[in-house]
Image 1 (cartoon, rainbow, N blue to C red):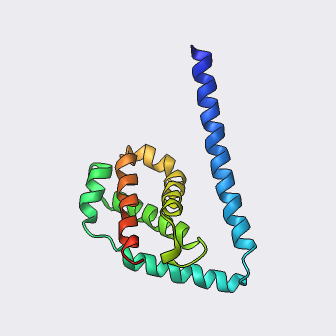
Image 2 (image 1 turned 90 degrees about the horizontal axis):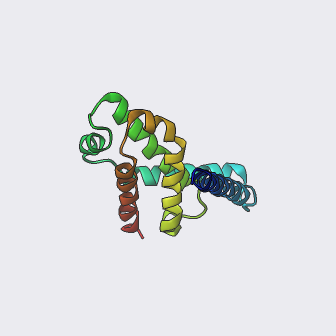
Length: 146
């Protein structure tokens, strides 16, 4: 029984690693094979980031932070904002305009951000499912732009 559980856990870890590795390699490949120059890519990414930031302005941040972290503090609010900014950064790195971003790509950007902050969230005993839900609901705001 223990051996089977160990094998399952090992397979899950390998598949997560393979997914993340493939995601990173795919992103890098798309970025470097882009027909635009590096400067144009950076300008496009910055423009997209600014547009996303304006669209997804946080309202009711204290309520969200309380539901996710249990209390509102400067640290927990900053952590939420950092994760939110990481999602925006991941989405802005995608090719194309905001209107061309697919829901699946947006959700992958959310998962990458959560993965980056995984250890901090664990230490804070954050409700990751609630956080993921809030971040994914931001897709609805993007959908209204299209």
